Length: 410
View: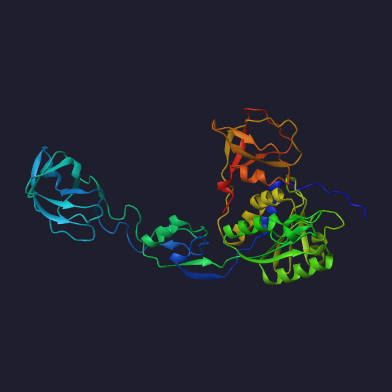
């Protein structure tokens, strides 16, 4: 059967097609805040209190009336001692209160003087203030961080340590999050062998270890997905269809690796077309052209190329934002930086290229010497990807768009 190539879909169009189809999971769970790390917030968090709840000191020192210290070098009687967690008495004129970081400002005081700017008498009964404080100095005001009723964290945020700390700071013991996305995963190729399964530790002729299984599982785990791993599937249309049906019946999204090209042993594409529909195939991206997107039953389908770098790059560029959208997360374009190239790229491809690069000591970008789609070492060596537009040659010193892996992982 002859094959007539169709025009390749541009990267931006492909991503827009996927994101416009994404449906966030509707199920919402209430979980303890202590167990919510990495979850997608389903409902905004509102504070019921002011933070701080009352005026308190930023420093160890002495709470005073600023007017008592206006002339400089004032000596005040130390009338009380206020540790954090305790409430002091009214501060009378002409007196000071020994106070410790976080303690409440006693009524009557309007400033705090650092202990380094004070000299305590030998008997501890008085203190000489060697500073002229302004009213409000070193005082954290009630509600200066968070006001009661304000939104602390908006919906759609992936909860990190920072957001969990904010939730705890306003007393939220539980949060509402989206159900974890169920992702099915399987791999095609009779050549695939799992590490540890080669007889005597020696790979048979033509066999390769299934690195993509480890790569993709880790990427999905970093995104907080629940993974159903169906392992290696034999190179046959019937076996591929059977696994596809089972995975799509139990998952929100099914991802495959390999078998989406046009060879006689590439069975994933015809299997998807037989069981469901294929909405997108063949993208103007390098590496990763044979990326497929469609739907089987109620589950979405994403077919990634078999070469490991192609799988890695297409996951970061396409799959990750699609998963975030399905999780109900706010999806934004990854931040990028224009950095000088420490390389020449005289023969650009007609596709959008994603080149593995790292930042050298001069702040310029170096390329991994071998940009082949099977060279997995390039992904570990690199700091991120150079996003090179179709047909764009690069001369050393040109500014190029660099996307660090910190923007693309997790």
